[in-house]
Image (cartoon, rainbow, N blue to C red):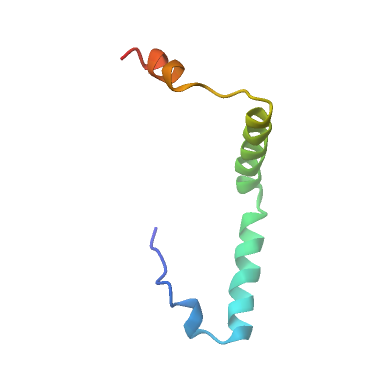
Length: 64
């Protein structure tokens, strides 16, 4: 995937910048991204509840 140059959007006028923003928001609302968003939300809830691994638990799981 190509990355845009940081000044790419700055070269567009305000109306075109809004169009780009609008279509990006539409893409992010698609179902294939909703699954990812749901996973992130679930993980944030787990972290808030303290369900995190310690450094030593991670290394023990790797059996290093």
